[in-house]
Each structure stands twice: as structure tokens, then as C-alpha cells.
Length: 145
Image (cartoon, rainbow, N blue to C red; front, side, top):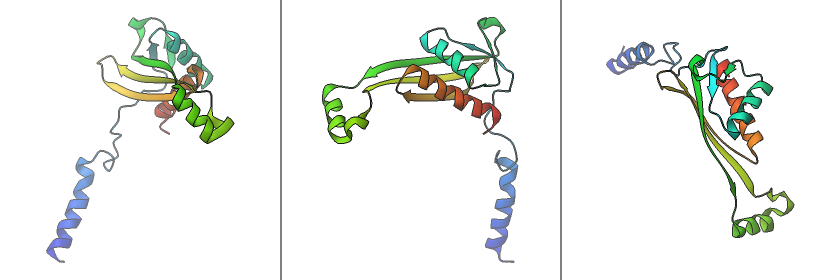
């Protein structure tokens, strides 16, 4: 066997020893199903709680921060596009241009040690859609989809 081919075979075989995906280890920590989660209070927190229940995310929500295993914090903002941007969209897209309003929510889910195990930014037309997007992605994260 040629030395280059032998070296390549040894290299590929060795990948499984140090690469977490090739070694069969999940490199990202996951939120376990049934975990107790505290959601930061506020308008988006209430919408996210409702979305988690609606989307059947397999977690238990709590209002007691001391009982929680994981913590969801969010930073969100509603925005209205400027007049020039709105007029341009209407001229280009016509009635399909949308409302011109959007809601952006950035969510992080941390464990007790402060390690971020899930993060998502959702930019949707309204707070409900943004919350449902985050809840769906959280469900996918937990179930491994």
C-alpha cells in the first residue's frame, strides 16, 4: 500500500476518536423532555408560554424561578417600517407587500450554570407568530428533529 493511502486511512479512522459527531456523541447539549422551565415575565413571555402549551412542547412551565432547571430570557421589539421603505414595497409587491409591521424576538434558554443550550431569533408579523416560531423550534430541539 502506498504511504499516502495508508496515511489517509489512518487519518479517517482516527476522526471517530476525536470528532463528536463521528464518535456518536451529540456535540450540543439538549434540553431533556419534561424539564422544568421558567420564562421571563413580560408580554412575550406570556405569548411564549401559550405557544409552548399550544405546540405541545414537552416541558413543564413554572412561575417559580427557584424550582426551574432551565431559564428562558428574551429580548424583543416591535417595529414599523419607514415611509419610503413602505412605499417602495407597495410599488414593487402591490397588495402582497404585507402590513409593514414586524415583531422580532431573540430568545436564549440557559441551564442553572448559565450555559446556553438553545437560542432562536424570530422575526414575524406579530408577537403570537414569533412566539409560535420559537416554541416550534424548541420542540424540535428537544425531540432531536
